[in-house]
Image (cartoon, rainbow, N blue to C red):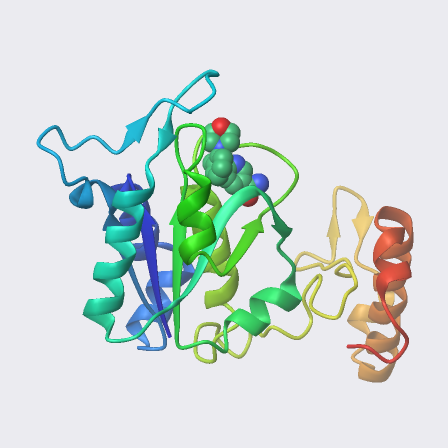
Length: 232
Ligand code: 4H6
């Protein structure tokens, strides 16, 4: 799949693609990530892309036209229209389930807002979906876009080694992760639970399932209520 990030800060994204799990996905050829500078589509000699909000108020807004021109150019270059996601505190909160669905798409573009946001008209005109990474506010949409990209990338076949897997992890089956331990067997007087040293895989699986339920009940009872019986 291919993800293009539309941003005023393309350099901020590039460093993350090279490092992290995204670099590995790129190397394996399962994912291409690129960023496009919205400022290249300013269309005026001062390269300005912002203006004051009608009706007054603090701060500036990104103008509709540069965002529109940037997306139109991307569509031309790709020869297709990617699913366009706008990262915004107003969006629907990201879930593992939505990331899994998005990972099925061949082309995604992510629009990052800055200043106080973007002129509503271009959002209505081109945005397919608004996503938030949580109920808090950041200075720009770039970090949320990278969070979403990482979350999608690790759902692609070939991104994770088989050892890392996607199966056992927190939130994948709607439960939190069970506690894990590595050597030594005793550290500062704390012992590794005996069952994990037993080599009895059936008992180990049962212990882990119980622990996942216990941890989830203690910390995130809301996840247990959401989980429908039989759902993975
Ligand atoms: C769109 C509209 C996403 C994007 C406004 C973006 C948090 C999230 C932004 C803004 C974001 C999230 C601009 C509003 C700066 C606050 C960029 N913050 N903001 N939760 N900020 O996913 O002022």
